[in-house]
Amino acid sequence: EVQLLESGGGLAQPGGSLRLSCAASGFTFTSYAMSWVRQAPGKGLEWVSAISSSGGFTYYAGSVKGRFTISRDNSKNTLYLQMNSLRAEDTALYYCAKDDHGDPRGVFDYWGQGTLVPVSS
Amino acid sequence: QSALTQPPSASGSPGQSVTISCTGTSSDVGGYNYVSWYQQHPGKAPRLMIYEVSKRPSGVPDRFSGSKSGNTASLTVSGLQAEDEADYSCSSYAGSNNLVFGGGTKLTVL
Image 1 (cartoon, rainbow over the protein chains, first blue to last red):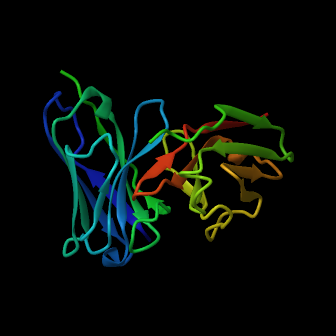
Image 2: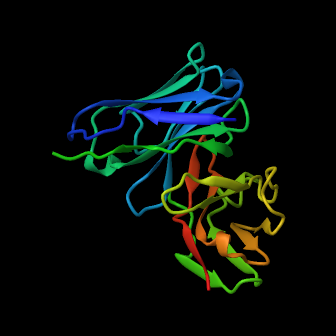
């Protein structure tokens, strides 16, 4: 059974940093691209960042480019999102999502339950 | 990148069919056959219902179908059932390794 378990969320101050993790199990982690997708309270889904299966290629939405860094440790089956210079508009539930291909295609066949990141002073 | 446009709400009676639209531009929906649809029940994670415009993942009922014409993609739910009541969101590849979502449509089964 595929499982994606996010952690690391919590209250952050504007300008602060936070690191999210996503522990994956039940599939061959090294074969699939992964993404972070967020959902602000009462709003729609927003793609944040993607990483190829090898970790060699990373992609970002314009709203987070230069502030967020996606990475993965294939030896630990874990995906990360380092979030710096946080803003109030980054407040959201952050989902880890598995792509159905080794290169990011934006086809997310499995999702975690999300980790909440409120940004407020 | 602007979000794709979806109607905020849609509704239908049990057994009826309902279609939800997702309008983009030639730079996203119209330019690629990488449109997906997700179902999301309150407090739950999204579930993939349709990918590559019209393909259904294993386990998704064939009551769900997808199509595309020009810059608009559509999700049709036939034979509506009570459990289909949920939020539905579309997404599309938008070039330059970008992905864009729609704002979501709340489907109500009357």
